[in-house]
Length: 241
Length: 296
Image 1 (tube, each protein chain N blue to C red):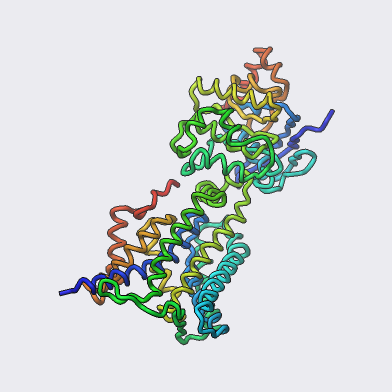
Image 2 (tube, helix red, strand yellow):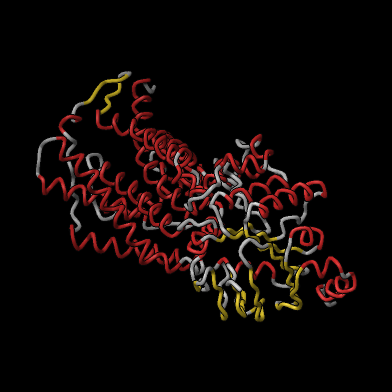
């Protein structure tokens, strides 16, 4: 068995005194799409922020291509090939669509196939909007732009945090198709989702998080084929009131 | 009654005050816009620029115009390097802290640099003569305008246009604008934001040093000039809108004219008229003429 591209080993992460992750371990093999599944506040975003170095893990290890990146700074991690697409999108609102993409390419400065044209081919809508300010885009357009902006840095692994959140069903379908195309091109993806729709359509492997820890790990086919397991896990992932 | 030539003279006087203020205030605005730091020591950089220009001219002791311009750019560059070192080694450790620490630090810097200047250059007034090539004056609409002031008045809009061009038409400028909007995101995309901050702080300091060096033929160089200018520069960027380049530009123009004509109306309260103006603008537009309401 070959070593995974990304190997997260027993990380604990806290925001100041409030602890968010209690020993999360997961592996993302090259070329795979792995999904973190769970409700709001179970630690999906924190896991991604820890991988990215934005909220560094206080213990545990994050191994990227055989190297320990746990305590590297975010820009070094991005330059090493991990691209982060945050849940809240964080478009540079005063910059045009084109400028947002150029900043993404320029910031990571990694060689690779992605160019403004390639992003426009993936998301044709953005080509029409290239001169518009990021702040004036709709939610779906912003989601495309934030993915495109990260792709401009030619990442080997894409961290996609809840891409379908707050989008209309039709927009979600289009996005699903576009992310599916990225996967079929060989891009490795770590996805965070609350619902099963996006995750089961794309993921090869699923980790279900609850209260900052992994409660289930298994191939997504198991969830797809076994409605009882699915219901059990979703009940598990639900917040305890 | 006031003659048109006299009024024009006041107008031109206000304009050259404005251009110096713009050079200072633009650096202050850029640093605030990107780093979110209100740098009280910006006026001290201006003062250091003036002293260094005097020093270089003094050492070269040349009567040619070349020595003056060499001194101006040498002083501005030295201040830029000083700014970069201060940002990198003293200010950077404070970014995670409360804003109060940053304010206290830049205020402490004002005191330290003022004392350093007194130790090195003493307390006497120093002056630099205009470069010989610009020693003359022309009569325009009946008002006598020194050639040197004409150059300054041309330089202001040129610097404004240059900074605008850098911010909007170059890669580095786009990164700077992105850093001003969302520092963490830009870092997560792979940009070394720390280096960008140092560069920006150095550039803002360069503008302060440049203004200080350029002002030496017009004003005497003295230990109090740092505090005097920082108050004016803050008024300018508050009028124009914190962090806005065009705000600094038009804020400086308005300030210069108010000061220039305010003196005619309230001879003893010219600085008061500017404060009154600032108060009125803040009542109407609390975020300044070109500023935006703070989102967070």
